[in-house]
Length: 424
Figure (tube, one colour):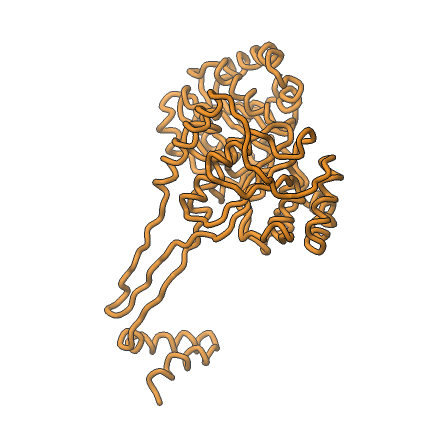
């Protein structure tokens, strides 16, 4: 049975009671700091030493010489369909240049300029994620990023990243790939080596060591987010199919023993039915041990609410990476949600669809960060730059206000920089 939290009569802030995976990034930062600092100082040799120690692979070169991998025909077809759908959705995210005439002779233009060089991290631990290559590369390409670099851990058998990851890189035209994973990949991307030029930004999910390294190099480079363990919340009423709900909770738990699977429901009957189905369904899965650990962990459980109104309050407080709504008027409820990385509406929009072929992006904020952050998109790789163009008359007309405000802030030289243009 999943852990249960009954909020039907509670007046307490639900954020204090909701299950959440715990990940001590601060502790991991201190453990991984020597590795990151060594790579910053010594480059290639430190990357090789860290890869030998953590991955058990001795690299003769960091960059993959031949970016290629075998794919079965049905796998290639599925990946090509995923690429096409993700590209279709993300092409509509392009930003356009806008010029605003503030006054006659005075304009501000907002341009959107892509980051020049981006490092894309693709995990390779408990599972391989060729789909993550798609989710990172496609929006970066649409944004106009000039140089894309992929890092993914070397496999012990080959010393290369997973063949499916390499195959997707080839499909997408990415030829700069490094067989480096974990914190050492993040440090290499940030500081560079004789083989790898430093990047301007690092994106992509990873484990606690990757997250800790991203925190350490933030400021040296930009990062997308500090990704934590994956999570699903399902908001459901008595119309939801318990088998669908159980299957979706299981699918998310399959990622990691720390993965969070949370059901928020107004129906005790649904909660009981899901609990009754889980043991048999989990036993039938390939990764039953991992799934069991995740479902029985403190980060997973059932939250009972009095009605869908309270359910909306709870899921907004939880701010799930993935939120499914399986209830009456699911779309109307979805449109009222403020905090979620992505919202999956109705019985036929499961999170698994979004992981691969919905067209949406599956790199999403975790750990409640959906309250203030968005998932990966074309916008991630763009920077807004203002062009300010005023002629002499337009500046003259506003100069008095500039001087006044400069003096109010005790910055008289700011005012002089304007008035000097009109007094010889």
